[in-house]
Image (cartoon, rainbow, N blue to C red; front, top):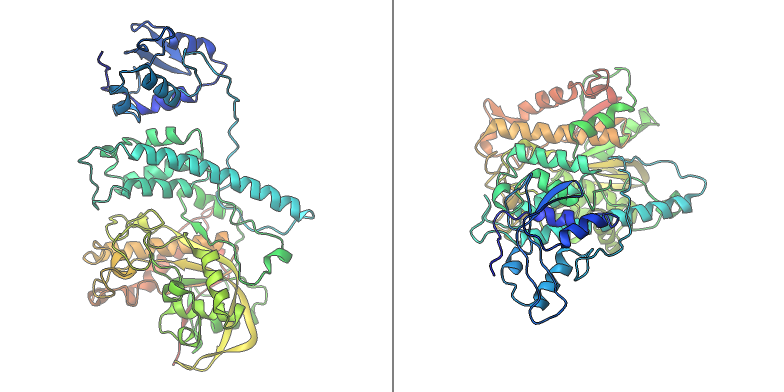
Amino acid sequence: MKIQSTNWDQRQFVDMASAPSDNKEGWRKVSEKNPNKTYQINGHSYKVVAKMERRHQTMGGIVLGLLCTIGSLGLAPLFSKSVRQLFTGRQVLRVVEEVFPHINEKGNPLPVAKKASPPPLPLVIKEESPPQNAADTLKSNQASTKEAENNQKQFFTSLDRAASNYPKNYTTQTGDKSYIPNLIKHAYSQSSSLEDFKNRLQGLQQSGQLKSLAGSGFQTVAYLVKMAESAPPLAPLQGIIAPQAQQANTAQSQKAKIYAPTDLSRAQIYQNAPTYPSTHPLFETMSDPGGAGNVVNKIQQLSPNARCGVMICANSGLPCGQVGADGHGDIKTLNAKTQEESIIANVLMTQFGNDKSKHKQFIDASFKGVWGMVDGPTGHSTMTHQGIDFRHATDASAYNQAYALNKCQLGVTTGTGTNKTLIPGQKNEVTLIFADSINANPSIGTPTGTMQRTMNEKASNDYQFFRECVKTKLRSSLDAMVAEGNTHAIVGRLSCGIYAPDKWKQGPTNINKDFDKILAEVLNEQVGPSGETRRSYFQQVVIPHISK
């Protein structure tokens, strides 16, 4: 007997498996052996197009091929291959159990507890003062986090199972079959609700990053959202931390928070954020031989209640740069010429002295798995934990994210050049904002290093695209500062150093001269509910300059 397999819809298998147990009449109709009827079940129209009975058995098992007569997506389901090969009663029963877990071998419904979907949590959860019963609150947060983790695990498993049905000749623009699933997983992990997940997928599709979706076996955004209905994404609870007494442990830290603002979440960030009167220029440069740590100290002396956000010029493939590669933080990296290594070494030594084991623990606890190359500091893949292939990205939205780590201690230094040392006891609390900006320089790094694997090919040949990516990164980084409650922004000159090829440092395409214009454009953008500019949400915006 031939089983029709064309135009089968995997999504409808999911619908059937999750149909409510109280819809017994629908299940009874489905179990009937009439191949010509159309049934309304769980809000969808189905037709029985094939059946099979158990051989040599008095009690028959059936397999029903269901063709959705409305909204069919036209792709092979997870079990289509198995169904085509069924010729024995044992195989029939196995597939009935796999495809329809809520019915028995006779087609009768099994009792299934109906689980209510939890309400969506807010996208960004700011740190709050510890409540009176902090232990109960922490326990509740941990339970919510566990539910979010379980939902994510369930969705990722379904996604991987679906990905196993790629056509044999399917390829992406990178030649990597994991490219599309990784993008989808990243969008899910950043979403606060099913609607947010849908909006992120649509944004990826519009930006061209999901242009291979139609050939991947997933077909449409609507299909992916349908897959996630039974395990909707929940907002991460990284912003709610343990009470201060538990926070003060030695080398452990909360994970860095990820901010990738959409229009909706950006509006939420600025909805209730405070604004400040204009008593400073749009932005200003502040010089000090000690760099960012000493600039922060000057600001704190003038404004003791300041909450400084320090923007770090980071790499998309390697959190904390070379310091993050092995967790070391010593005098050598404290005096590094690169901004990221110098600041991270300062934080590690200020908080933990020269205890390298604690340095490593802190970096792993804060950043491991949040961003970076999937195969580590050396390898061949261009895919990142962010779910983005930065080397082949063709839309500036790929750079719409920043990573925040609050309650970091940044020390004050003395000395100049390669002879800086920390001044004991002089430090300030800051929020580190990691801005992994665009790398367009093909002349730095090695083929297996993170710099070459994150070097954007389009930006190395298109200055306007390069400029727009820098602007996107500045925008998301400043938004993250506002979300973290920072009153003073310490801005890094993104992509103005080694990430810019020589041709982008001269003439009309000189990023160093253009950077001030880009920053001004971002600060003057209207983001508030009444048209307030981004600049009005900061008391002061400063670009540090390391004076000789």
